[in-house]
Image (tube, rainbow, N blue to C red; front, side, top):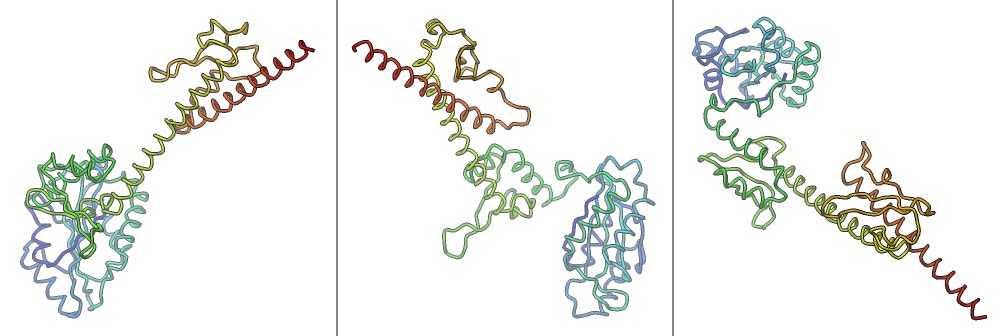
Length: 357
């Protein structure tokens, strides 16, 4: 169950929208259905009790998962919405509850008067936060599924500008994972007929917002979806670039460690192929793929230990964690082999000195 707070400017427009061909009135309080004009007039008459309140129209859509369709009877939907109304504090006022039948998932619209029956104001303070909490609580109480996201919306049933807005949403959602910068996103969306004018801070070149434009309609990123606001998209690109830089640094360090290991191995044990292994028992090779190739392990009788199991990726490791760990391991082993080579050379010098004596 998900509730969406919708800004309403007039009762005539709001009631006219919710009473459509594919709809059914479930409940009404203080208004006289089904005549639209009479209901609108009922709402307007009550607003006269509080003429100082400007925004008198309350409008909330409540959506349920398609998985709940079979059990979501009109009676159950009405029961859930009545409890929603109580928990939201929308009491002692007029309201109209209408179920829409034009989508595959069950959903309804609640229109209410923010001027109460006694002229009191029905508060909209923190309404989005309260709405989210109440929807979550009722979803758990009634054992409901999560309501569908934008991906489940059937565009062919939408009217403009919603149709274009969902087209833009889908284009951003599809292309964003392959974009590492604003320029990447702008280029990819252009292929879908979407332009991205930016909003700037005063007369400066500092960007502070982004708009998405198509078919003559223009939406801010946050109006498309909260995750597509300028600040969140900018954070996404910053994190993507930082991650790309980190991976490049990891790859560079890994290749350097491979080179150091091979060099130290050859100095200590001879030919990497194993044919010149200076009499040591071969411990085999480990294959790192086409880009790296095979790497010989230290001989079994060597005091320097490194096994294939140590170089394997652990089940709980991410790819980056695996590369970082084996890079450090290869560097440690390479350093140990380099020290062993220096020790061999020192002993050889000592023997030569004794022979001269």
